[in-house]
Image (cartoon, rainbow, N blue to C red):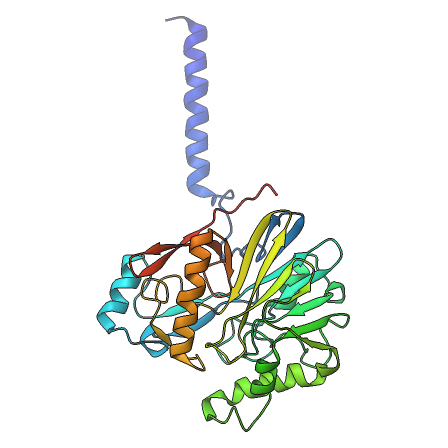
Length: 325
């Protein structure tokens, strides 16, 4: 063996021994830290000539599914959830708030829970997420509400009763405003927080509320479609821009499986559960037949996809996220 080759082997062996010894004495320093935070909770995409951003107000832990989704046996609920790789003992809903830059206006659809923690500490993230997305509250020109439930109108006023969107005009159906701000109509004790939330956020802003009517194009490119049942004046909104469409469906359906596969299933928070179910079938049939994409307020983040017919019901197909826009 050549002396030079032997010397090199001895050098390599010594270096290996030194590295091994050092690794047993000193803790590794290249591991990633634990407890890292999630990425900012917003997603941007294009819709025709409009720029859209979906932001989150945080998740709503709804609890045992049998308490909210009525008319299904426990076995049927378990089957639907486990078939879709979801836990059978609890349901969690998202809060997907849409913000459109139309080119001339910044339009926000629904506003989350605000300061109320009726469903726990995970909600009320609207203002934080807006800041992450670089959208100041003062830049919002219009706040469009599908209905006046606690998790849709709650973000209008701050904890100090200041307007979070001081330059915005507010849009909602008159039926929902009149119903949810009236103590005589919202008299069920377990809905008192809904009444309080609507009165706290809507009544002080009555001077800047415009009531939307079925079929009305109240902002260029945005049409109201009356979809009563979940509430008396629940409304979804069809958005059109440069030949592209999307429907912000609000609470037409709360779950991507439990109110889709069997759409006549009733939901505990519906004002008129049977009317809500019939409205759901009618509107989902229309969206499926016309292949119109939807954005669902409570579907898995960011809530964008399509519905397709599946037997007597429907299936939800989530749209792939495009991170290049």
